[in-house]
Image (cartoon, rainbow, N blue to C red; front, side, top):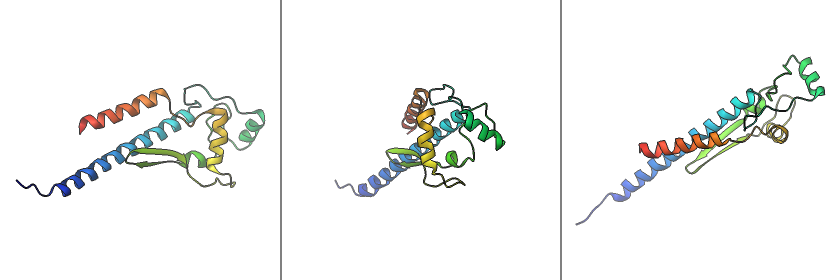
Length: 143
C-alpha cells in the first residue's frame, strides 16, 4: 500500500495550527492591552488598587492645562497609551510601548517605564491570567 500526498496535508495542517496559534496570541495581546487601558483610565494599578495621588506640583501643572487632578489616570496627551502595542507569534505575544515620542519629544516607552515604577499599571492580574487560560482552553476545545 502506498499513501501519497501526506506531505502537502501535513504542511497544510501545520499552517492552520500556526495561523490559529498566532490568532489566539493576537487575541490575548489585545485583551491584555484593553485590560491595562481600562484599569489605568479608572485610576487603578494591575491589582485594582488606586494609584497614588499626583504630586502637588504636577496637579498644578495639570490644572493649568485644563486637565483633571482628582483621578490619577496617567493620561495627558494620549501618546503613551496610544503607543501600547501587541505583537503576536505562533507561541507568544509581546505587549510593549512602541518607539516614538509625544509632542514634547518625550519617549513613550521611557514615560511608561518611569510611571510604572510608582503606579504599577503595566502588568496583568491573576484575574487576567485566568481569563487568558480560559481563552486558550476554549480555543483548544473548539478545534
